[in-house]
Length: 149
Image (cartoon, rainbow, N blue to C red; front, top):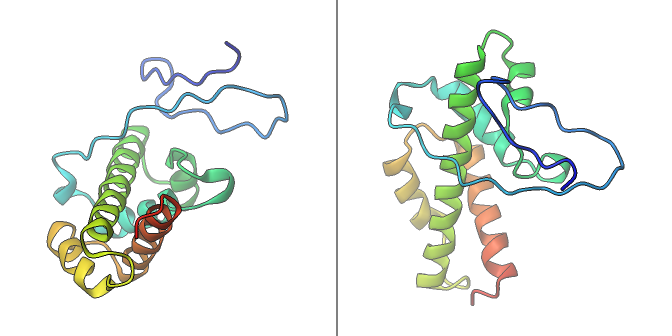
């Protein structure tokens, strides 16, 4: 039906840049990205850049990050870009789910970022303070939007 996006690695190593066309299309939401088992071997600075890109709202909300990451770090190859995309979007989803669960346990009125931050620092010690704050605020947004007390 229309312009459904389907990523096929054998045809294109990087997903195509999103179109700014005003033509209506169907967006298929892909499976959640899997966090690569070798995430500890990836460059922490690049992970933080990618995580920041994965947290953008607006037209890039929940979009793959390969093209934007390539614009910031042109030396990355397609397989590296795909690996960082999967890692960053997977970590984003895992952290936001954890914020949501944390808020359900303690309640939004009693929640403190410092309590949640302990989990992040243990689970993903490479995440910088700016991304920790952004992850927490987005997780709070989703929880409150869903009516978590």
